Amino acid sequence: MKKTSTLLRSFSTRLRPSPAVAPWPPVRSAYDRWLAAELDSLRADPHAPCTSAAWLGRALAVAVAAQRRLVASSSSDTATTIDRKTIDECVEDTAELLDACAGLRDRLDMLRSYVAATRVALHWLEEGRGGEVAARRAAAPFAECEAVERRCGAELTKCGSNLRKLGERASKQPAGDEALSGARAAALLAVGALGAALAFRARRSVSAVSVFGGGGGMAAAQWECTLQEVQRHVREEYDRRRKDGVPCMAELDAAAAAARAVKCAVASGRQCSETVIAAAKARCDELEETVATFEEKIGDLHRELISVRMAVLYHMAVRPTRHMPRHHLPSVLFPLPFCRTPWAHGDRRKVVLFVYEIHMLIGAGRTRGSTLDASNMLKPALARGQLLCLGATTHDEYQRYFARDAAFERRF
Image (cartoon, rainbow, N blue to C red; front, side, top):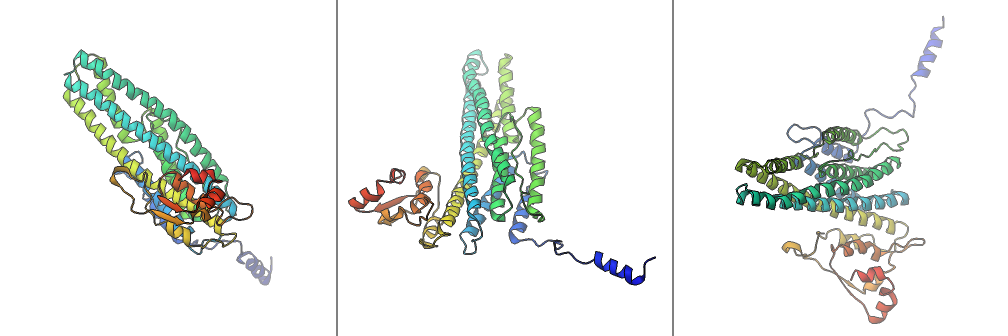
């Protein structure tokens, strides 16, 4: 039997605290608490399931808020810890997400055409009292609806494939800035779920992203755990509806089912009742309102992603050298109310950016080994019509500097 002193020495050795052990409970940042609370609101709710338009709208709102927080953090003076590789990956990721937003807008336009064709068919059936002539006239709009269903599914498959590749690439990236990771994960969740929800017959499951990358043994943040739970619930529910062969979004499923009921009644030679036609018209109105809501929210996400792209590009431009004043260009660009089109539907822009000696933007802030300058930072907003700009220069300076940058000149 060991002596008492020996036992005490052995116990003290085993119970000695190790510096490798993380403190408990783990220290949570303000961003972790905020994003975890936002994602927690997206968990299973009987009043707003993940297959409803209300849930998808909330997911888009969380993604928009995450992008805004990222822009705010990147424009602060303390945002100096992001390395060049992380910035390059963020620029590439935002480009993929911008393409996905453009694809979702195209799908929403398809749904509008689907609603319009269904309404035309219902109009002929309602006016013709269910006669043979009315059935023949309604056949063409119904055929257009079927074509939209096929085309929408094929296009969304390509969009989902790109998002899946983005999610796989994100899972291999090491853990870095939590604002970058959170904004990317929130956008992937919202865009991936909406992409699957807008398909009449989804062919693949919802794209997911793993945020537990290369953390060096660090404990996962609470928002990461919550995100995984939300993604798992969405994938399970959407996979179940996909196997059943029905649309993932409840509003789209109801509209498609109402249109099928009308087509079946016409195909069987029976007169379509006014009740069935009225129900189909109500479903069309509901789907059209849903499409309008999604268009607004996707537009918000698209604008915020552009702001993120410009913010990280500016961070990369000013970090090596301080040739450009840190607050000059962002203070002009970020407060501007970016809109989808400058002069659409009476939403007239109240800000026109005037640049004196505009040729000085070409090469301003450029560093050795990089082609990024002030003109390249303005090109995305100018190309999409989201920034109205006038410039003044002389003819000689125009020929010497401006005309040599064909891409910048083309945007004017």
